[in-house]
Length: 251
Image (cartoon, rainbow, N blue to C red; front, side, top):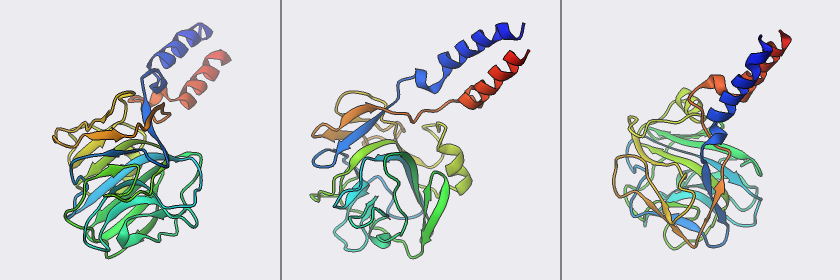
């Protein structure tokens, strides 16, 4: 009797598993592709959190940026990227040398949090380092995905997904809990949310109610399949399904 329940249970798993829903990301070629917006998305004052999933394809010979927005004020430009010498993550002009290496050829969740004037960098929900005296400009060139602000290059070679910008300092617990599950588009403090699940076209849509934050794909970054997917029910995670199958077969 227990064994007879195995196949319906597995059918429900595959029917409702995250992989059964369309999940895409954007892939950048490292030479010319990026996403532009017409807004200064990351707050220049107060607390903020910028988080996303990234897959860096290789260690290159130049500086590259996941996201950025710039300023004419030297030393206060915002960006998150990697440096040219040892592939360490850079967190803007106020924190260029983090000493924190960016993993290659794997999906990594990155979160930069500013609370007061202290910035903290998390990888996969784990705090890796902090920097005091962190201040960015209150205005400048618009938010970009995949290269440096303004007319600078520093193109990213890899994929990116699930970009969220908050005007609050997310806690370590919130970052870890939210990195593998969806958040409401009306969540308190959520300024912009680029799910990047369009799968085609030239628009990277912002899912929050704030207008004017949509991105435009420039020079055709590629829509690719993404393994970054979420399940609202933790009982449908593969490990739990395997355990359930073992128990059913034991009968």
